[in-house]
Length: 167
Image 1 (cartoon, rainbow, N blue to C red):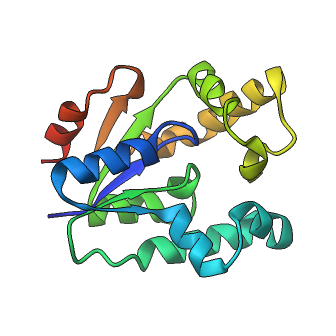
Image 2 (image 1 turned 120 degrees about the vertical axis):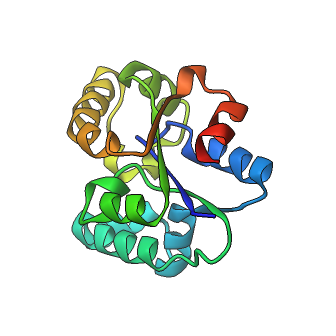
């Protein structure tokens, strides 16, 4: 079985759906961000601040491509993972990719309920400024996200539908 890579903007539900999908299909679940935190020995936000985004993206790409994929796996990626280096092409060649689409306002509604300080790309933003940033970043990333094998609308997604897509 090929690995399944879940992609989409931060807050789109990749980790939540990834755990459900892995359980339902009896696959191993891997959260790429958790693997990176283990590898770098600090929270991603701290690494971003200390070394910058370029250094983080190199670690992220290397970690992605070194994941042990010998058993059936569902991988939740970071929101920017598909947009750097050849990550999207590599994921498409290596497995199946699923893009969790949500419109900017729905992402904003979800993200304002989280710890935004733990998300380096959104640090210091709130209100309309946050919504504008989400809208802009999503526009920049859409061309990468839309290269996915499957595109699902998170607002109407059902677990059985997701399972059927990856089989």
